[in-house]
Each structure stands twice: as structure tokens, then as C-alpha cells.
Image (cartoon, rainbow, N blue to C red; front, side):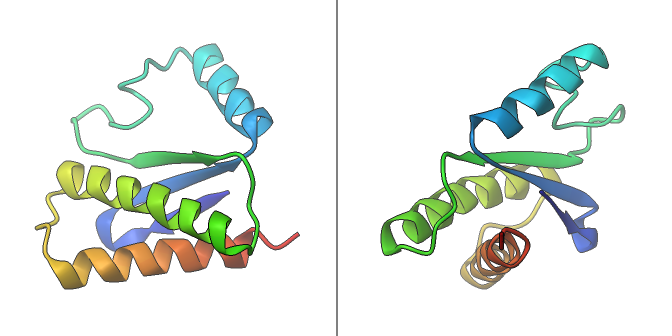
Length: 107
């Protein structure tokens, strides 16, 4: 699933299960994208970050796993788009992305 962060001009690609991630990787290879191309556009600015988990569940354990991986995602985005790593913006971004994952991930 894709989560657009229009305010930063980037997308978060969230994959549940190895099949989704593998399909994305095959499409990137077929399109001739390198690993660097998958996160940066031609002028070097970040256009997206990939997050992968094995399972999406509402159990406390898996909610923790999602929050953990989303924190890595936000750290990566902070670096690439120049977000100052301070409490409020980072916390809101982690919360927003996690919320979108669960909203869009309903099956």
C-alpha cells in the first residue's frame, strides 16, 4: 500500500508479506531501477521509503512491530527530506503513518 506524505513530497510504500515486497522488487528490476533509484529521484531528493513486515495484525505485539518499523521509516525520511529530528514532528509523523497503515490495511 502507498501512503502519500504530500507535505514532504514523498510516499511510504508499506508491504505486508514477502510476496508484496518481492513483486515490488521484480518490478523495480524490470524497470532498471537500482537500489538508490528506489528511494531517490534524479535530483537526489527522496521520493519514497519502503517498509516491510511479515504480518499486519491488531495484536499488541504486531502493533509494536509496525510502530518500530515506522520509526525507522521516519528516521530515514527525516534524513532525506531534512526534517529536524525533534519530538513533536517525528511523533506526529510516526502516529500518522501508523494510523494510515491500519486504515488502509483493513482486509
